[in-house]
Amino acid sequence: MIIASEKQQELLLEVGKLDLSISRVEVELANAERSETIDSLRTRLLATSENLLQAHATSENLSGEIKRIASDVELVEQRIIRDNEKAKQVSSEREQKAVNQELDSLKARLTSLEDSELSLMESLEMANEEIAKITQQRAALNVDLEAELAKQQGQTLTLRAQHTELSEKRNLAFGKLDEELQKLYGRKALRGIAVAQTLGRDCSACRLSINAVQFEAMMAEPADHLPTCPNCDAMIIR
Ligand SMILES: [Zn+2]
Image (tube, rainbow, N blue to C red; front, top):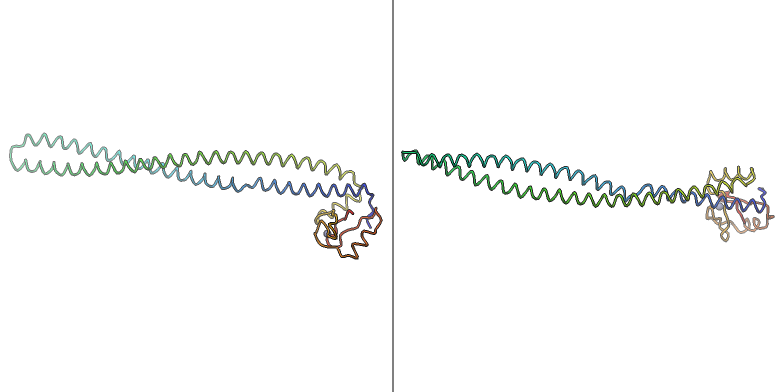
């Protein structure tokens, strides 16, 4: 039979309650540090950074193509000017016909180049709109992420402060326990909840019901006796 004064039993109960609170704070801390919202925001930011790289590459390719076509257009235009000059100077009908044919084909080529240029410019405009859109998305995601990180930091700091405060109280109360009770508490705490109370005939640690005979015997014991739960072996403070 464990013997413990009423004062010691109160201390045991206090240590038990503080340890439960400390465990709860530890769970909350772990949850706060493992934020799904933050993970998801980071994943989305990573995805948008890949999209942005892709959009920039597309825009650069289109600009390059437009530049090439523009220089082709220039060459064709120069040849048209030259051929127009030539058309004025040719003497024979045969030569005239040849120059006119070349001019027709150059003009067709020019039209086709200008059509391609126009369509590429439309694509470039779309690519640049995409870049602007992704940049905006990223800015919004960054704002959300910073807010979440600040919130997380606030929660973590509060919980750490609670943890420190509870641990100090717990150690103070634990230090006032008799050495034997400290050892006993330590052994029982390793296996589960060390201290319990009764809720009706239920043990508050294991939530199992203590049978009526054992319960009455337990209640009939002297006040400085410290019974244990027949189910989970927690010390029961009556
Ligand atoms: Zn129990």
